[in-house]
Image 1 (tube, one colour):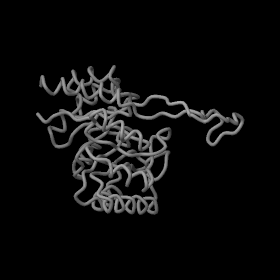
Image 2 (cartoon, rainbow, N blue to C red):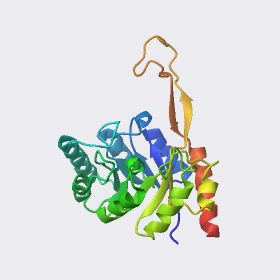
Image 3 (tube, rainbow, N blue to C red):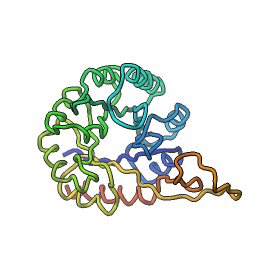
Image 4 (cartoon, rainbow, N blue to C red):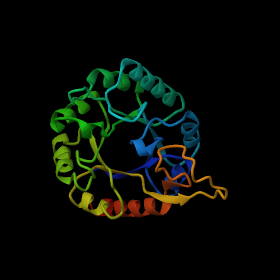
Length: 252
């Protein structure tokens, strides 16, 4: 059995550093986590690649909302993948669906071809697909290395039965990476159920802004946005998760 690894979803450069400090195996770079994540800036990607000791994967998603993409959006994603490849990124995270809830094989094949020899993860667009078994087989046929999924449930903990089924059906042809609500409190149950080959977590904590002058009436985003705090990855939470995984790997 291959060792279970820990991937951290990193939305800023401090989160990448925290992931390294906590012992994570890999980071998935993304921006706008409140929208489920979109492709991060080139500057962020380049800065992350300059940090040693961790593999860097990049989310390829041009916008929030659904996973049905126009030809122009597919071209945008292909260009982003090409840029990631030129920066020496280790892997990309992709996904696209048809209006009927199937894997968009034509779009995804173009993205996979562009990725060339980079590692490929299919993201949680899978959780919005209609038929999990058919979608899994399509993703495997694309040549993806991992599938990030909550088991089509609000959280990976809730999705354990489906995660177990997917892992059994995959038979080692693809790694099932459990994500959504993964924390030191939920990871043991997911691992005990043998429901995942890898774990994916943001491991975030709230950090208050150091700004002293505050114009509370002005919002940069939604009306209920908190402009004076942000969520960023905690090295302590990452370490706690890694310790849980290490203990599991040692026993199994």
